[in-house]
Length: 236
Image (cartoon, rainbow, N blue to C red; front, side, top):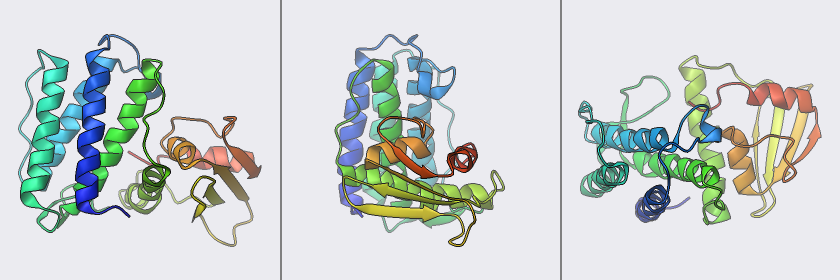
């Protein structure tokens, strides 16, 4: 797993790429991977998430943001606030995190170093896809960490908050580009299914950005059970 310093550097790179893509975009362009959002809605969302995460890391209540006059400038301001906050606090500080039990649970600020990298990566993918651009060029290891965060942090938190039920089907996910496998569901489940593909495509599958029927993925086993499991709220 990357170190907090690694995450902070990666966060800055991804934020800069998001701002660069946003700079060339029409705010009214639809973002198909985000329901009925436009590019402007996506930019507002990610800027707001950065601002909110920075406040929680500081163990403060979030101050509402004004309506942005310039989407790029507003995004860059909140992106900078987040990086500066995390850098100043350091990963060992204690703040409010998403601990799987309550919205304002306390824990190490290192949580936000990782969480905001993956939040930014997924929404950078959304933005670039909406603009007809290639996927972000990041390592398979980072995409694998996205998969790992969903299965070990976000999905358990969704269960703890009663936003979803446990997946019963045994699902094994294998990343072909880094030779890594994850599994959820009961080991002795009657229904079993395996999915293989690149770490990126597995991450996008778990985040609902691609379908198990995508050509890049190979599914073996009970496809209907897989579709049912993926229809649950594995992520917020």
